[in-house]
Length: 138
Image: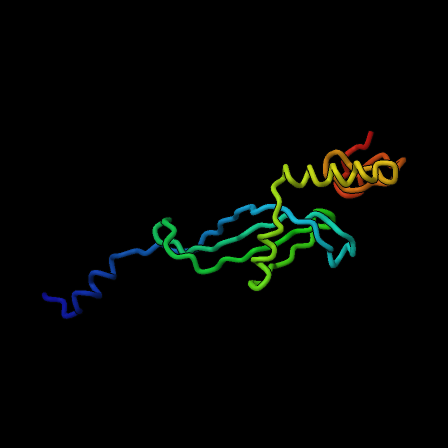
């Protein structure tokens, strides 16, 4: 007996398409700016997250790219608006540059403030643990 279904539907009835999406992340650098939650100048980690459509586990089409900055003090994550990306990119520092700047600031104010050796956040003298990261203070 001959099946009267079109040839294309017969072909597609035996095919399986595996598709989904995959998230990619990339660390871009650091900036120092005022945190809206902490209401203080804080270090922010700047990251980019991209999502790609995948077919057969192979990334094919990027359909979303967003940049975020995360306060290293309170953990607040903020999406960076497209119009601010260029300004933020101009202010980015590597971890080495950030440590140098923080070291210079700490050197200028060493008599006024102590700094956590682990996260470089200011701490009050006499504290046993850093309130930002919990690292023991010497």
